[in-house]
Structures are given as structure tokens and as C-alpha cells.
Image 1 (cartoon, helix red, strand yellow):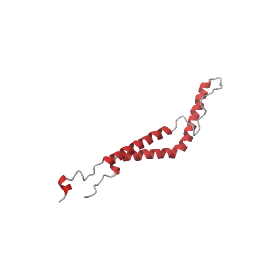
Image 2 (tube, rainbow, N blue to C red):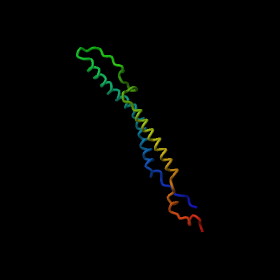
Image 3 (tube, rainbow, N blue to C red):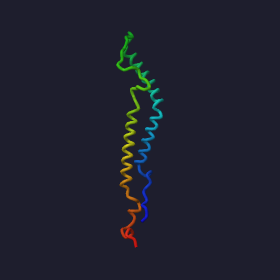
Image 4 (cartoon, helix red, strand yellow):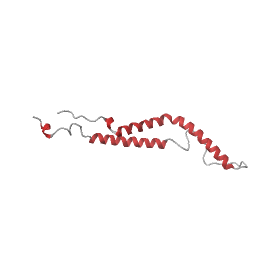
Length: 119
């Protein structure tokens, strides 16, 4: 009996969803340091403008409950995006495995019952 031929894994759309989500996680990990520095600078500018605007014309001291942003402590972090991409990768992996386990070999559907019995 011949070994059934399986479709290549790259034919599955779940494979490509998995690849793109893993590349997204890798890209986030790569840029996180630079993002933190840039985002902290932008947030400090925003916080300074906001404090100047709320201080009023007499220049009264303004106390803010939140300290100025740092590279490790920003208002807009990257971790929610990493969590979403990680969840998509887990879902895609599960669907890919499920699809591979349920996959019917392509030549098994082409053969008739008489051929399976042999001569």
C-alpha cells in the first residue's frame, strides 16, 4: 500500500497567520527599546504642555498624580499588542494542528474500494 500524500503545510492559511503573528512578536521585541525611548520623550512633552496649561497665567505650582514618563513607564505600552499577537499565534497553532490531524490524504479520496482490496 502506498503512503498517502499529504498537502504541504504551507497550503494552510493558519500556517501563514502563525508566521505573521510570530514575526509581529519578534518585531515588537526588536523595537521595544527604541520605542520606549521615543514614546517616553513624546509623553514627557505632552505632560509638560498639559501641566503648563493647567497651571494658569499666575504660574501656580501644579501637582500631578503621575510622574513624568520614562522609557520603562509609558502611558502607551507595547505589551497589549504583544499579548494579542501571542494569542493569535496560539490560536493559529491550535487550528493548524487540528487541521493537520483531520486532513484526509489527497490520493485516499481518489482510490476506489476495489483498488484498496488488491488483486
